[in-house]
Amino acid sequence: MDAAVSYGKYLNLDELLSLQQPRDEMEHDEMLFIIIHQVYELWFKEVLHEMDYFVRLMDADDGHRAQHTLKRILTILKVLVAQLDILETMTPTEFLTFRERLDTASGFQSDQFRQLEFMLGRKSPAALERFGEGTRAHAGLVARWNAPTIWDAFLHHLAREGYAVPADQLNRDVVSAIEANRGVQAVLIELYRSSPKNSELCERLVDLDEGVQEWRYRHVKMVERTIGAKMGTGGSAGSKYLRTTLNTPAFPDLWEIRTQL
Image 1 (cartoon, rainbow, N blue to C red):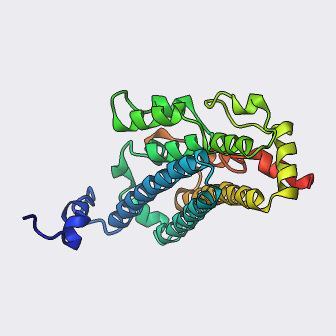
Image 2: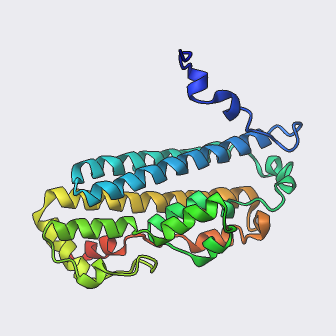
């Protein structure tokens, strides 16, 4: 008979707690840096898990549970932002004590964050090329590259609900960027005026869009607070590049209609 599953075995704690390996045990702050980023990757995994579930719920036209799933994602995003407060307790000089040992390691190499971007419609060929074929990261990104985005799943749900979503939007190339569309905006305006259920779903998507933008902004400020305008590790452009990602909505139609309602 199998032994009872303990807390430690269920969570694989021995393995989990062995994964924090500073490159210099004498540098106090490196442990914090590692743990924060490992926790980020775990949360990215959970957000992707929930986004996949959202798409399945949209495919099943289960708007109620889809809203609940978005609420969970939004709550996680708030935690991701709050974690930056912890990282900002590290002063620039404390970070410099171990920064050189990061070598070519960079947050640009987070394939899970790129997968998250792909699900929101920001699909970059450069992100695919950054990871070698045959790797877990490349396989995950290829799958997201070819899959419909959250927005595509939402539009198809609206079409099944009887809304006149333009055919070209329902059949669009899911690899291409999501762009504002007047036909979709007309549908959304009708929806906001006549369907509280679906308008609430739209508002949760706006919350998601805003939550990701908030995280991007706080991330930029954290980088600037820590290293200023210096180049990032791994040859990245640091805050200069990160600033180019700000104020770009994932779902532009949901923002465009605000002046039309």
